[in-house]
Image (cartoon, rainbow, N blue to C red; front, top):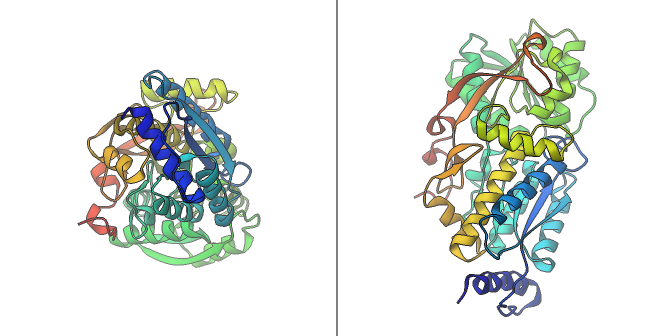
Length: 404
């Protein structure tokens, strides 16, 4: 049977779940459909959003150069940070539109729900922008790959770096859903291991606007560090209001998950000196700069975030695995991704573990002072490289039932 017929037969299986009968294989199947499920209008829209769609399109274009007669189609939707909307979209894509994989998935609650559906339907969830470490822990699946980073990596690297400078008493400001809970949990473990203590914690809803009360509580607790276990618009507003309340410089602010778009929105004057972990920076290597140039040409000069880079790399790796295996069956595609290290132009050498964690180097950066920046998006100074085997939670410690 030809490759095209095998892929067509696999695509027919997806439709059979809705139609109760498998579609026959065809000699000229439709394109491999990649669904970019993102936040297009909410607090993560700048980190992901339309930029993630652009990144997936760039991956499809690069794959076309080596794909032979295989075609790829990119579709996208806004999950509005609501798991029910995300699930409804994913079901429609799988049952009616022949989508074979879903990528991006910012918002951990949405990602966990969609990944579970993809497991049931034997299709791949590329959770490139989801951060909860539960994706490769208790909620791991043979059809899920978490590509960029996670709360264990972010919390551990940041807590170790800051506690190592003697700043060991922390107060958490935490977004009240899966991402925030996991960030605070994983950072607390690393902080206590480094001899630190937690002075208190305040939860806030997603897309909160007013942080006056929790900031006053943090100030009254006498902590050395205000740890922001949130991201996007919430993190930006919290940093701005912390400055307005005069918390800094007496209290240091640790952003446990900050991206390039957030620093851009804050401005270097407000963000200078922030230290954080990231898996990607556009100006780090020739490969990252080449990708950023192409991305910027499509995005009015904007440079890509690590979420955008993750969508590109995960999508390209997925398409190559589908080509090589001749199937879109999720378990087989992910097994192919695990077979050998992936030489990725943006993340370097990537190894996909049994729990679905994509392992690669992580980097500690510091936001530059305005005087040190040479122009727009020249924001980061590299402090250290954390090797992949140290950056991510040990395989045996995550509680993934797939790990023998």
